[in-house]
Length: 308
Image 1 (cartoon, one colour):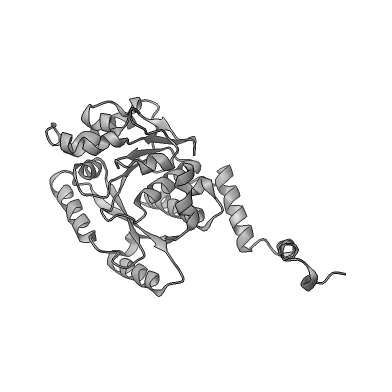
Image 2 (tube, rainbow, N blue to C red; image 1 turned 45 degrees about the vertical axis):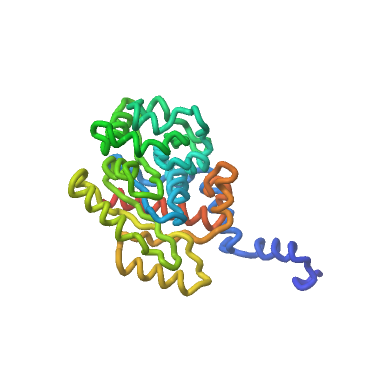
């Protein structure tokens, strides 16, 4: 009889899995991947449509990545989601696999030319319930062109309201991915929404510039949208191997309390790779740590909406 010591590494792994109760990390990842692929778990739908702006003028915090993966997670688990890509770089459009090259109808036409969202929206191949309003390079000039327009701060709000109130729209979530700035595009997003979700990376200077964002939110709330509030904070790029990551997480939780999701998004190669394949990490590698974390974060967001 062959002893465990005489088995090759791959054979030892198979033996371990065969003898286990299915609670190994590999088995957990496989089970998570199956749940994502089959959509076997259905998240609770909000009692009324939730419009959420994802904003942080500090670049590199995982803002677009968070938008994309929350959207796909919600859509794969029973919710109808509309993503509005408000960043001229169009990274959310890329990650969701929708065309956004020059000449494609996009959010610029919605804002500047008052074209209905229904005329520019696209279906994402990542999930049947996921719709995307793409951004092209044309959006780069929108900040200047919006200045002279009537009701320049509320153009996105009117477009979203018109689309979502149309017969058959049945939208549960609208997620707006903002540019890394606090200009008119971001103000349009804040006027259109009741909730702001802020991704904060677990790194040095994590809270740098956050005060300016919070002041902008307060100004919009005071003068343009009294419903606006910071509803959710997501900790991203968490590295459990460093003491700094825990210190930053503790500091953010001390400042913002229950607003911070209990799920933290780990630093992950898979999360970085996925956009290069025109996918979210949830569909690119559904068993990866990053995908599992984003699904858990989306579940928290969904549950909070029902509790509220």
